[in-house]
Amino acid sequence: MITEEMNDMETLIVTRHPGAVDFIQHCGFAGEVCEHFVPGMAHEGMLIIGVLPVHLIAQVLQTGAHFIQVVLPQIPPEMRGVDLTPAQMVEFGAQLIEITGIQTRVV
Image (cartoon, rainbow, N blue to C red; front, side, top):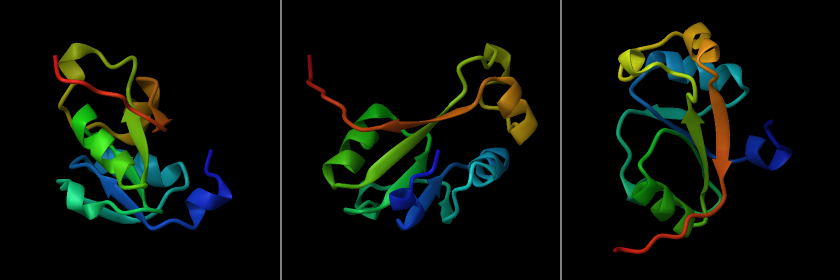
C-alpha cells in the first residue's frame, strides 16, 4: 500500500526486468527506472524500489532513504533470472516489502 508520504517522494525503480517495472507501476509507484544501482544515488527522503543485495539495502537505509524490495516467494528455481510478465510475477506470489532496518556484522 502506498502511503501519502511515499507518493510524494522522489522514486527510483531499480531493475533490469521490464515486467518488474510494469508490476511496480501497476502497484501505484512511478519514478525514474535504472538497471544498475550505485549507493551514491540514494539520499534522504528518497524511495528506492527494486531488488538489491543486503549490503546495498543497508547503505540505502543509512542515507535516510526508504527501500522496498520486490520479492517472489513462490518462484520455481528454473524461472529465476528469466524476464517475467507482471501476470507471471503475480502467479509466483510477487510482493513489495518495505525494509525498514538491517543490522549487519562481518563474521
